[in-house]
Length: 117
Length: 110
Image 1: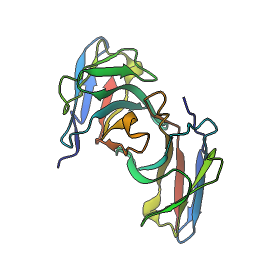
Image 2 (image 1 turned 135 degrees about the vertical axis):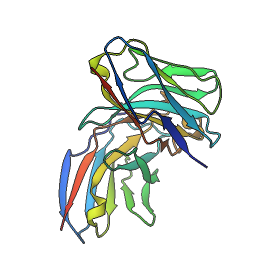
Image 3 (image 1 turned 90 degrees about the vertical axis):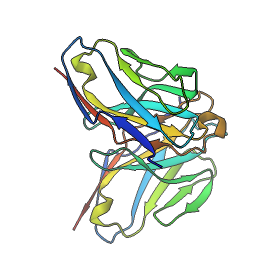
Image 4 (image 1 turned 180 degrees about the vertical axis):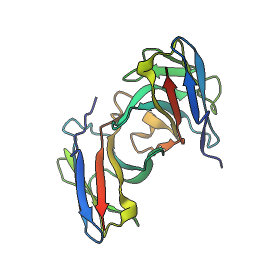
């Protein structure tokens, strides 16, 4: 098992550019989520998905889109990058998420460090 | 959303026991409490999880009082490699999503 993988590891964008951060998991987990972590801060939930075809917003969804066409993949799209989106982005997955009654353990990817100039 | 509150930072020395307390006053009936550890430039990783009373594994213990409005992570005999940020997570199953707090930065000194 590779677990949760994220690409790229590092990315530099100019303001206004768009890009997609990739996330994949090979554990057949239903629940996947995206977080951002600003320097010295905790993780903030951007979007999450409880299964293929189902997505919902987290705490800070503005400027980001997601889709979940397969169980394995959960890409995060930046529509028009802004310097305020400079952060480290983590993808996570868990077996059942909400349906497990809160007992699920989240597995995190290694992160993507994004800089927007 | 269930909000958690933890101390921002703690210092300790090698070999000491460290206790980190998290407040979660609005915890829902079905919510478990999970603690994660994060090293610099890495994603968080699971340490321990519990619902009530006491849970122990090879890494830590978790103490949860009867009212479940707080929990305490106990790390026995810490070493320098335990220097990390520790997060208490309450999933808020009623809302279907989890919210991390700002975590506690633990610094272990020689």
